[in-house]
Image (cartoon, rainbow, N blue to C red; front, side, top):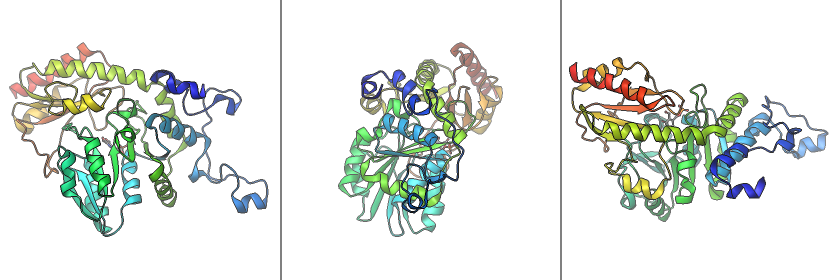
Length: 389
Ligand SMILES: Cc1ncc(COP(=O)(O)O)c(C=O)c1O
């Protein structure tokens, strides 16, 4: 399909991107290459490393297929594939930060990103500062001469604040910083960070790309200016992923468009219904008109995935636990993006700026592929239990 595919619909492109079946005797899928050693035909080729593949850490036909697919989806110059979403956060931060540098990280960031910054980055001599997810262009006022990275995640983890990414990117670039975005929530189907001024787009491919809660993987896609340094750090760290997981994510991409459409539709229907349910003080979903970041979501994003939060109208931890314990279809578990629904009582104790206030406990719901009526009935059980506990 080649060039013609650029104009095709997203599901057509997802079905064919990444590999060319003709490269492997016409087999539709690329081989799962398990590799450390790659042989060279002679000493001169070996000395010059003058062949496409040279060692397992540097890439294989399997990793190339997924990287090519992500490049196409993200509009990126290059993509590295790492063993988890958390590694996809840490590797670019290590690539672009040194002792004496200053980094700005959004306060609604995924908690383990904060832990990495507060422990390892600080130990390496990096000045870590958190900023308000609603800062937008005001980020200019926080920039220092040594600010090297502005880290974004939109919507924010658990509370779903929308960031004005184009405004932040413009201000960060003005100050000479690289802009990174954890884009896991939207996937590149619903937001393409590099088209909005971001330099490096990060994904926990563990979530929607994998889609089945059975593996961990991360991808980091960069523009031309940033890819070489990112790739160099990736090689230096040896942070390569296992071939079976890489293959499974490529496999997951084939159906990601149809899965996401279903996640989006079900989540939005449930979110709207929840807005009218007794015991629910607030629904934190950017595609709802009531959400404070709705205008930004509508301006920049082309869809919403299947995870959002509700705020119970009081009751504290006992109400949150009663809600969770009454659920029968929703599993109590971390992560999201899989086919099954999950719920978790959100911890916000690490926040310093984006602290609410919230009327009661915040419960995050990952809406899976089950039937909406069944999920609503399950949530109703949870809400009844929370009200009567
Ligand atoms: C926004 C976000 N980024 C990154 C990650 C990390 O992904 P992984 O679980 O693959 O390490 C997660 C995991 O929940 C996440 O929610």
